[in-house]
Image (tube, rainbow, N blue to C red):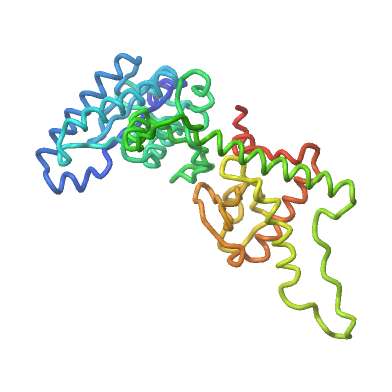
Length: 345
């Protein structure tokens, strides 16, 4: 039976395909197929230098196996750079953008095929990649983050087709993207501070203000959550509608402003309901402020909402998490998004 399914082994799987392949074939079949053959040959040649093995072609892409995640990611980054440079010499009609997905997992390898969850996850990650981009799983990221000089952007937990559990994914920023952005940036004379220094200084000022305010609250005994409005002394009269909601929102604003995209507030989905979250699909919702709006990251789908658009259950869940955070030792320094998902970096 073992011979029928192949040999089990740990391997890094790379899936590639051409973005918009069907439309390009419809526009010019001969030219597209010729260009696909040329690019697949380029990828094949590059894989040899990274200890890669071509398992099979998938029409417009390749299924490859590598002995390590480092070899697989190095191959993918170099391949995308080569293709990008090649595309600069071609006309717009001849250019092809390839997407790549990489996962490290247990597979069954035969002479002509490879099977297993590791293969399925790599294939689904490839569909999450942008044209000309690379998408890797958390498992791959954990292996290469301290070994390769790469920049990776978190995509959050992704619900992949026919994959039982959400897979935390990252997008690798290829140097070609950075070089293109630098070329497009206007040249300015004179010495100036990098933008990220200014942003870091502004964020530090906000954090210091929040820390001082929290310390003042603890010394003065001010409650962490606003008190509920008292009932009207008139028998049968209810408090004015919206008092508790508006008071809670005013309490939330200065405390949530410390949370940005890189260190969002973590809200458990079990505390929320409605159209924002489907129960049991994702354990955490990431929340942060941008300007006067609230950003909600639901399984990688980022949504912008004003406070007026949030229902009372979401507002209550955010207030509860802020209150819990303020009571924790060191609560004035919220964990980052990577710490929330156990990145460990």
